[in-house]
Image (cartoon, rainbow, N blue to C red; front, top):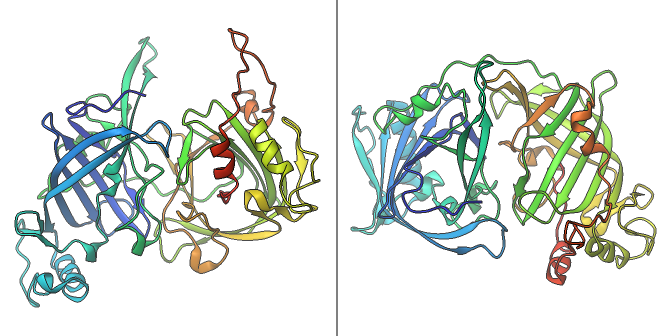
Length: 456
């Protein structure tokens, strides 16, 4: 991936309504300058369509890129320093609620941030943080910019959509660090995964109805996104990852799901890799079970709550490192002891899962789903975001309040996606006669043995 140069990306924004854990509904627009300064807008809303603004934050500071991350392959570590954070309220209600949060939970210097009964003044900017005066009243909002401490820039080319056109256009995307799923951990968490990518203002995907709206917005004029039709929850069919996904704790994977609406059963394939391009497979997991009838979420508007029962699972190690780890696992804890070999699938249902991979069978997970259409009228499926700490949403109170990267619907199990269901370790050699799938360092073996598998 290209290095992120200061001044590379003058403006980057997220061209959709984002759902963060809580839930919080927001859009973002970040400006990076050649002298390493940045100016970021975060627009918060009452609704999941980002049409009813609550308040806006304007954040100013400085960003310094450091070195390649030794934890998250393909990422660059960075330091940032905040100079100022200001807030603009878009209603009396927003002003009253935020002032109450700050006055009740912040330190002595913020207890009188806004006196009770203060009348809302449209367009007024209030200072939440100032490096000069050493005042910081942002904690009550769960605000932190630790997402800037992990960055990655990707470039790819999008085919031109018009029939009479040929060729492709450049698309640049900025990946920033993930947000912890637990509110209390946000202020301290250092990311190891990513949020959904932001788009370059110059080189973004097309079509993009929201791009111009967000680009022209500022703290006084928050973007009001176009109306999007609410789709009924239709899970039946096959859904697949649109790109290599990166999760916290250095997990790279792609997913492929098949939902059978007639009997409410499901199948899932989880393809794990050692690299951020998903080119070097480490192991594959197949899981299946059944799910409940969905009901509208009372906590996350627009979402649907379901419960998933996982009853069966199979594992295929794809490299020698994973084979060694599974063969050294405790007898009776993960398939047949000492029998694992690369490219050979083994049923772990008889051992009630696989302790080395954190898989427990049977088990139930409480999920949050959402379906929508993108600008190309393709059906997207959003599944609840996995807990950052690696735990499982195995009780209703642990149900997600935000979403992972979406899956795209494919027409049945077409040949286009056959590689997802027939992936095998072939041990092929490259043009130089070397093994195409390189064994991972021993350090990774020790690390992966401590991981808990994130389902979903």
